[in-house]
Length: 65
Image (cartoon, rainbow, N blue to C red; front, side, top):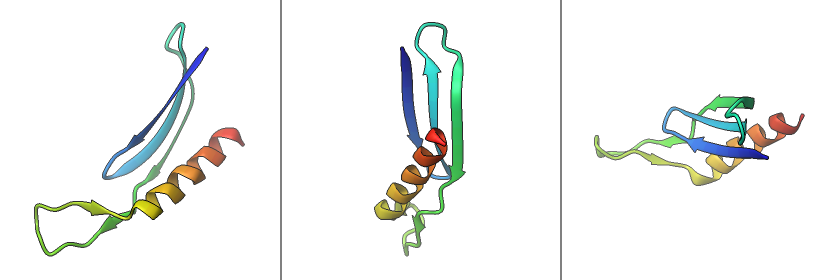
């Protein structure tokens, strides 16, 4: 059995697939997260959700290719 995970961070997005029995990394792909939106508030970190979806789809295609 395999386990897959997606990590959507503020600087990068990655997808990992591991072997559930021994924890071995089967496949890992990542890409810089360029979905940040500018804000007038210094403490606020908003992101473009549509861009995040595009990035995840792109990574998913790399996983299966």
